[in-house]
Image 1 (tube, rainbow, N blue to C red):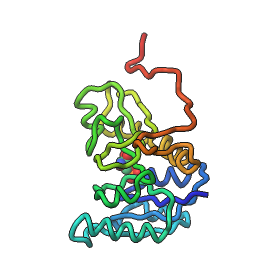
Image 2 (image 1 turned 90 degrees about the vertical axis):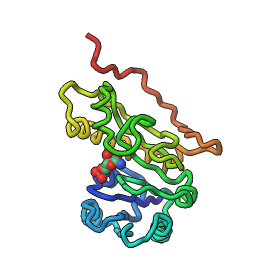
Image 3 (image 1 turned 180 degrees about the vertical axis):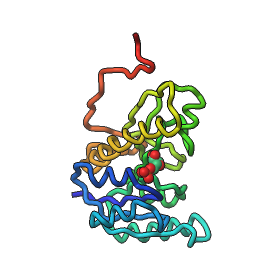
Length: 212
Ligand code: GRF
């Protein structure tokens, strides 16, 4: 069975989804850069070891990432999963975990990198928005895409209602991506492309607003 370590910064609802979804991976630890991250209590209540590596205790990104790597390595994970981990990682960290580091982002990448993705989607008036699970590379919030979910943007949507609709899909696609990864069904090849050995493709389109 493959082993994962999950990194969080806050509420950790994606981490909770990874923990409660049917899975065949072992969650060795949940690590946060913030001691007050709500998700830590949830992990502890489920018997998962937790650790805090506070970024504030380190003078720069390099020393924080080095300390983080040391704690992660203590658990010998096959994969490192960023589940709402709100720190920009350095190149040595990203290179060290090349092909073994994935992230979830609340937009259909490459649109809307960074923060406030739902507000930006509403501002632009796009009719379809969504979320992406991707391998982490040097590009912030970009990298080879494993899976995406699209949701319609509704006429009366607010940042909150749209965000909730996207988050619901995050909780579905993230455990799927991690299951594929751990089963060897998805991998990053030598050319930096995602290979999915399943090749199951949908045969429909999401049209928003719907046709009459
Ligand atoms: C999610 O929308 C995730 O995509 C983004 O930050 C949010 C974290 O939510 N990276 P949670 O902590 O998993 O509840």
